[in-house]
Image 1 (cartoon, rainbow, N blue to C red):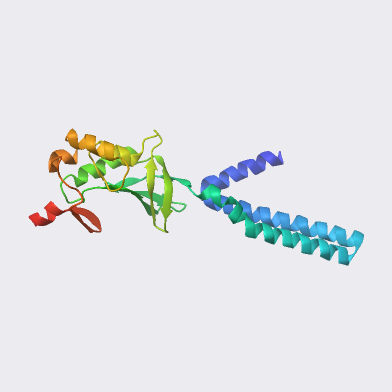
Image 2: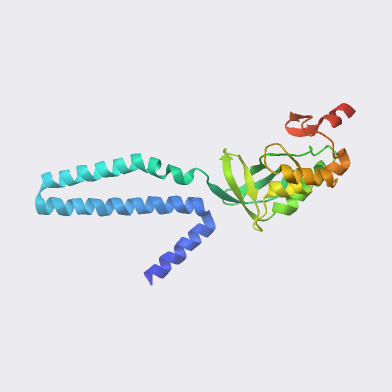
Length: 226
C-alpha cells in the first residue's frame, strides 16, 4: 500500500513541477536518507567496537565517497560527448528558429536555432514562407536536438521531429533554406534544379553567400533595393 502511495506521489510531483525539479528533489531526499543510514551504521559500529574503529570506518568511507566524486565525471565523460535533449516546440519565429516553453507554467521561452542552414529574413522575399514551413514541421511537437550547444536562453543543434525527419534537411530539400555547412548539399542542388521554394523567387543560380548578418539574415539584393 505504501509503495503504491509513493509511486502515485512521485508521478504527481513530476507532473506538476516538471522532471528537472523532480529529479533534484529525488536526489536531495535520496542523499538525506543515505546520510541518515550511514550515520546509524557508524553509531552501531561505535557502540559495538568503540570510537576508534568507528572513526576509521568513517574516514575510509568519506575518502571513498570523495574519490568517487572526483573520478566519476572522468569515467562517464565519453557517454556525454554527443548528448540529445528533447524540447517541446511552441512556434517558429523565423525559418531557422523556434521557441520552446520554460519553467513550470511555460511563461518564459527558449530559442532553438537550427544550425548549418541559412534562411531569408522575415521582411525579405520568401522569409515568411520559410518561417511557416518550419512551423508546420515542428510546432506543438516534442522534438530532439542533437549535439546541442546551450546557453541560458538559447539552444543550437540539429533538430529531428517525432516522424524521424531532420528539420534542416527537410527545409533545404523543400527550397525553404540553403546550406551553410557541408551537410544537405545534395538536397540543395536538387531544390535549385527543380526551382523549389526560394529558388523559384531568387533564381536557381543565386548565391546565398551574398547576404549580410544583422540580427537576421538579409539578402544582399534586398539591401540594394533599399
